[in-house]
Image (cartoon, rainbow, N blue to C red; front, top):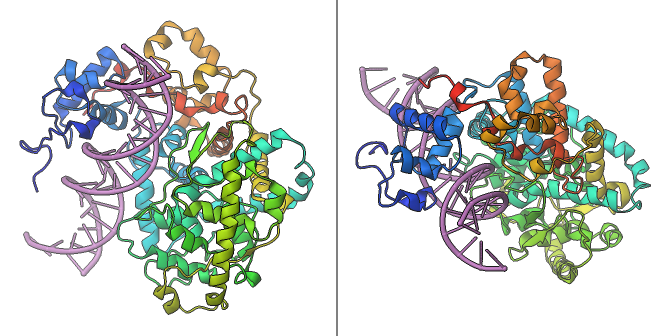
Length: 533
DNA sequence: AACGGAAACAACCGCAAATAC
DNA sequence: AGTATTTGCGGTTGTTTCCGT
């Protein structure tokens, strides 16, 4: 195979780099970077700073598209990059962060000083494969148990908190936001709903999904595996590819579903054949990625455009949804199935009561689910299916079941809100000044930083230092902290990240921890970097 | 030593948001 | 306001290295 960096392998496909017209008729090189190219790029950044990457090729003579330059700089040339294997602390943090936020590599990277999103992503994908092959749980046991405890605590407290359910907008806002957070994984992770091999304590954001779906290669029949697992709520490890992530802890199916979905649904295995509406089947016909890759997809901290109906119920009557034994997941299911249902969810405390479309969809979904229920009741009268049965039909529903009639504490929104409240907001330091320039993603250029140190210091005073990559990278913070501190920071960071999802609380969240708004040009000066070897 | 598979790493691609004009 | 460009992100693919047979 002709190497890309060899003569003749260069691509003139400008579109591959975003169609930059800056390239003109020049043939842009692809493939591995040479030392000379690195030097040129470093030199350029020293002189001109980061940004305007397309100009690099123009001004430096590099035959690389801006995109490639940016990537090279970000992943290899920028200062304070931490090379080498991940430490145990980092691995733990990654696992926890992934459990919380899914494939948000860039955001994870902001919490792992010196690490790049690409690095983390590669690590995670490799880890998945490795552990999958070894039949190990994807997430550390302590993480699972810890989260399980949290969930249990939430459940215990949910009755108390239910009293607050009627207390208006604030709580509702949290509920919406948390639902949004939870459904990130639904949207892009077909496995999340299509099977449930829930890891006890899984905080909902796609642990299993990641376990099974994140890595696509060499994973031939994930659907079969998940079906076999979910059908028995345990992993017996017979199939070679099976991931036994749920075998470490005895599992209560009801809790499993709760935790698995991160919702308040209560799965009643005894009745599960009453409600044959299948998540699995639905997902199979939904937005499932063809390769099963778990994607948390990209959602900005603020308004989120979603394919799933996570927030649709904010537009409807909650009580109706929650008390209707058929409606909860069926409605969701229907939405998930429908590729045409593409909602733009503005969760930022905007009034959710404006859509007639939603009501129509709910109605339609119920009608549909009713029909499907009738037909599938015939085939799902028995829950004791053999593996061969499972293999015969990819539409067999092993996750089906009646969701307990739930309302209040067990509602998905309510528990989600509880989760947020318990795990995040309580731990957040008070925020006094919304840092608009930060939360709005305003770029702080290096020049600004240099010329206005006071401004930077002022901004920084409103948020924990450790949230600032520049602070992290510019100091020995990461290396000097003790294990306890790391743990504490990790917890805080996770809590904060969760809070960040809450666009309804700009003061409490985005102003503090809008990591996205700290680009690398907030980092120490490029000219401080050691020479690239 | 040769081979193959797995792991690690690097880079590309497409998309979408942000920004500039 | 609309369009073009830039930037960032996540998924995917390709390459290299390591290791066991």
